[in-house]
Length: 397
Image 1 (cartoon, rainbow, N blue to C red):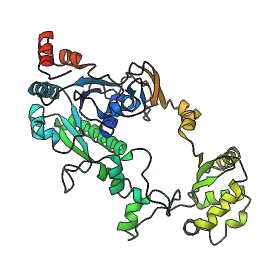
Image 2: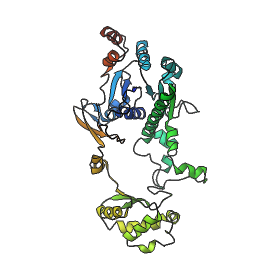
Image 3: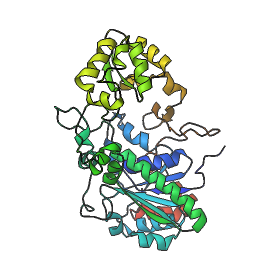
Image 4: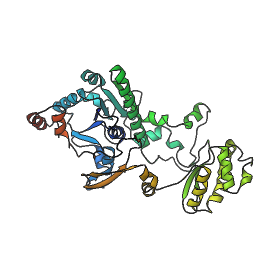
């Protein structure tokens, strides 16, 4: 079965993480993604881990793409890009707001070149508002969105969430917007402008934390691994590791009480309803559960809770999750020979599984400028003399 986005051409002028994460998903699903870099290359080419002078960070988020180098400060480089825009479906960038327009490519110009083009951008704060001109990285968006204020423990300073979720959530949102726009274009024939901001993105995924304030007038605080609206729904200690468990209903709580041989807690007024359990989680409920769980190895706890239908999971480190049989069964570690490393390497796979579609990397991330000449020849129809002239003019590499 063909991949769902085969036949769609995407010009990817993004770098770092948010934009490349978006275009990686499009490439995984069959789109022809042309990664267009400046002569110095994507900044992630210098981000670790570095093996054989090659970046694992870059290689992960740029798989399945073609690579081209254009000098957009040269008029000839701009002309190459204009010709590519005319022959493409989507263009993505995550420059600082206004930079792409200053290079000569405001949305009005893109529409003039190709009325069907879908233009998507990611920035820290969006294309309008008092902060629009400010640059941002993920950690800034996590801080300003309120996310860090509710992450960590009450007696400790705020902490960022480990992965750069402001980047990857923004990339996923832009990918979603592109797919919706492609669907709309099938009906109207018109392209559109997509504007995704990292601050907006993280604000949108703050779930009950925002409505706690807008509806209840309450400003949520850090509570560690506790869920403020469900209990027990937290991390606990076994003899050999820490684990998480969630009892989202009174029925599951009652089952847990039976497993712990603490049936008297079912009707204990401190724990009878979910609201009671939330109010009395620390130190009462937390103490009752850990008093039981610390006497057992996790494998014993897991067997009992799984049989009872109570969600449970060990807190794995990265080595443990990479070796998890479920990850292998779901083919969530893709292997590919990458010439940058001169070896076979593994990357997180695509979580979207489509029956009948090959679930693997089609090609490794491009070396710098790997496909420049091929793209000019096969897509733009340049002959060898014109290609040489473009190189001589420092338009490409």
